[in-house]
Amino acid sequence: MGCRSNRVNLPCGPTCCIIKKAKRKKEATSLGLSTSGLIHDPERRKSDTGLVMPPLKVSLIKDMRHVQNISEIKTDVGKARAWVRLSMEKKLLSRHLKQLLSDHELTKKLYKRYAFLRCDDEKEQFLYHLLSFNAVDYFCFTNVFTTVLIPYHVLIIPSKKLGGSMFTANPWICISGELSETGVLQIPKNNLEMTFECQNLGKLTTIQIGHDNSGIYAKWLVEWVMVRNEITGHAYKFPCGRWLGKGVDDGSLERILVGELVTPSSENDERLCRTPPMQQSPSMIRRFVTISPNSKPKLNTGQIQECVGEAINGIVKHFHKPEKERGSLTLLLCGECGLVSALEQVFQHGFKSPRLFKNVFIWDLLEKAQVYFESLDQQEINQDENWQTRARNFCRFMGAINRTPRSIGKDGKFQLLVCLGARDHLLHHWIALLTDCPITAQMYEDMALIKDHTLVNSLIRVLQTLQEFNITLESSLVKGICI
Image 1 (cartoon, helix red, strand yellow):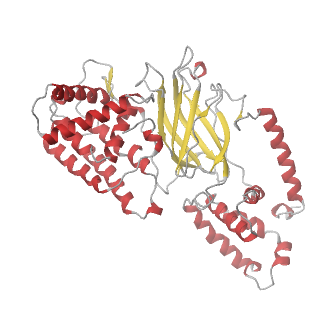
Image 2 (cartoon, helix red, strand yellow):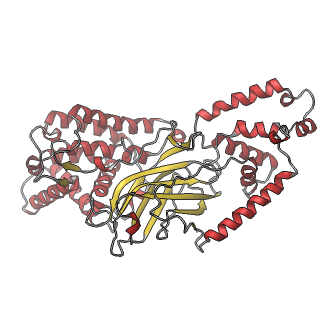
Image 3 (cartoon, one colour):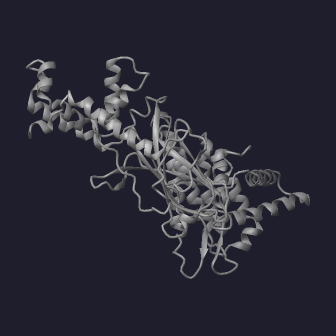
């Protein structure tokens, strides 16, 4: 009895699969399958914030079924290669092969007596060495089978305390990867989870999440969102920690969240994956200047310069890598240690507050600067031609962002301005403009970084290094912007 439990009993395999299919079918019927292909779980309400996405069950047969269902693969050799790729990506190659080779009768039938896999010592050594693949995150299945239909599971975690169950608006989500995006998917009210199927998105990079501002309580505080590829098991966490709603936070009805790859540990917890390094969305505390007696200590000028240097260095390294080895540029621009976050620290340093307990957004400063530049242009005050060109460009971009039909809020607009400025190599011009603007002198303390010409000139030189690179922005960042 003990020996049999470690063997793959081939005659019983299909029977077990049929039982599992029948069980899944029963569960799917009880949950309900919508005409749009979304599976909704009515038992999981927004108030159940303690939910954790359960790990995928390890199943050799299920992985083989996934490969067999890929219609693009016509030969047995091709299917075997696809299975190896999938097993490597799931870090199960050694485990699956050990399970297969534990059937000694089948091994004797298929291999001659002197075969490598018939020698127990060599086989054990081989399986042991295969474990080294588990130290690296491979995407050898995801990046090759780009047209395969993949089921994705989404779990949304709202705030535990601040009225998540009272939310009345209609939420939606759009998931973007390196290969494509889903388009807008409506999230059923009072549901935390849904599963949908679409063409392979590749490695996930960002999600857009928002709502239509309908109902009497259209304010939603989202802690984070989890999205998992149900074939490869790769799960991505998209931290948010911010409000979506008018009259709260920065007034945004939608946010772009940057993902981080997570993998389940042996205790079914989540831990950040080490390779490749990925960055999460900046947290709320970095997004606006909170002036109060209990404010957290700000970074000093040296630390801010270091943040900017690291952000720029990450982008430079990105473009110096071979194209196939590059990660997501969006992470380097909008991630927690990205360029947007570093420039936020620049603008937050030494900011004056008109009164206590007031959140002052960087976009407020930029809009006042825009009004100032436009007033000079209307008064036809003589200025240097280069200065006029730069000021008009700045105002043109500001106007285009403010006219966007998207409800991205003040922080989202600042992020978009930085991304567009990086794309068009204008950031260093805008920093120089704002440094000499009288509005800046009024709104910053004398010790502010942006009023120190030596530090600003250093910042400008660092930003100028981006001029040699052709920066292409993800469509999720520039939707609704025609500029």
